[in-house]
Image 1 (cartoon, rainbow, N blue to C red):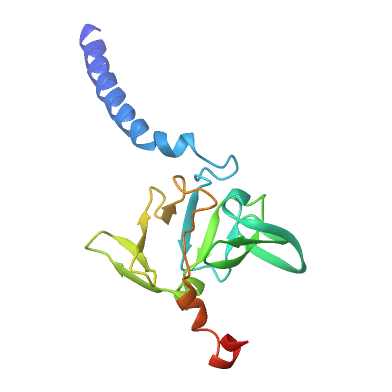
Image 2 (image 1 turned 30 degrees about the vertical axis):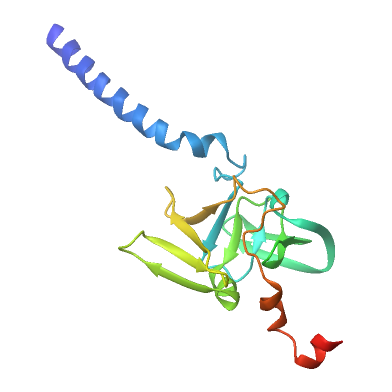
Amino acid sequence: MDTCCIRWGSLSKTLHLLLKRRLLRMLPMMLNTCSRGGLPDTWLLLDSQSSIDVFCNGKLLRRIYKSKATLTIRCNAGVRTTSMRGYLAGYGWVWYYPAGIANILSLSRVKEQFRVTYDSVNGNCFQVHKSEGEIINFHEGPKRLYYHDMKNRSTEQCLFVNTVEDNLKHFSAQDVDR
């Protein structure tokens, strides 16, 4: 009986240390999560399977309003709809669904505006290359989702900043002269 207790005690200590290490790694994520999905509400996910940009955290957006258009979202939770839109500074208009579980940027839509690279060996992250040279990294998280944490950025700080020069590229010389 004593031998059994000693073995159980050793196993218990080992399990305790493993659980403690794992808990310490997960603690930052647990302290800053959406209550609905277990993901931090400051994370932006770069999703290769999404065809839309949709956010659950209105604090990351500006000028949220009710649109005349409606978005139908087909997801694991079924079919959901929203008619709310918000502006992600420097990126553009995204859908806003406050009952959602994540802030999702469609990789397909992001690559329309920015160069996106990925290297599975060097850093294992997606890199969004902004025109002024800054690179935004989307790292692989514990659930194998690629994210960029906006926790240390205020709504006045932009994730994607367009310069006047970048904006002028979308207009003809005649439009600029007006």
